Image (tube, rainbow, N blue to C red):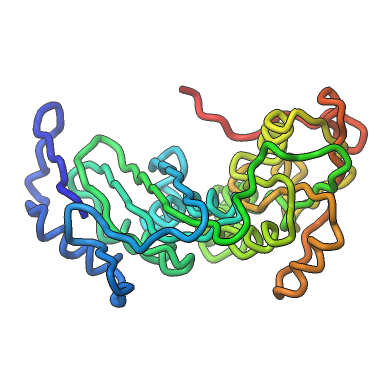
Length: 322
């Protein structure tokens, strides 16, 4: 972890009932939670001014994501460690969307005095372990709100990264799974569903489709992205970037979810991709033991044609008001 900036002006004092926590002691406990016991030879992770990694294989991928308590996670409904998990998982999902694999991540946490930083970092450590993305450094600072900024570094050995700019007319459009689970999970949690309900878990512990992204890249897909903000918004973004239109004939809705949640709920982190060789894509997934992707339509040349079952696909999804 790097040096933690702790400004004193314009912030409330530490409450008297809270013990004063010294920076080095907190960092030591956090390092014990997120640090790897086995570090590859020649690499330096937590503990120095910067991390040292072995050379990247193929193209280097870098992405940053920020999760804020009260914006990306309702702290009255979910434990704080879920914020840490979501922050890492959503950042790693950006690598999956490029067909890459993670190499490392750095995490910067801002929080008010008294925040249970150990709980938060347990969620970070869970996601890092499950996605094989070691936390190699980071930073701490005081703020009025709890936020977790994660920068991930990845690589695409062999063939190059998959972009959202190369969808071509005639491509078949696929998604890696049914949609709407995260949004439905939030709705059900608000209605009193337990934390271990499968749809609630989909919201609090999203899973980046890393293996699916790697398989798609090896199958030669033309364009791909993850559905973090909702199919209605994200696939329109892909079509904008590729300057194409699309005709969607199917919408795979997860059990227990509504059509709107599948279109605009967001945070599914399934991958949407286009390919000129659908048989090769399906065969690659099955040979790797993955669930076959679901065909949902075709890419067309006319940029003004963007339909779902003959009707315009609404540009529905999550957007921040800045």
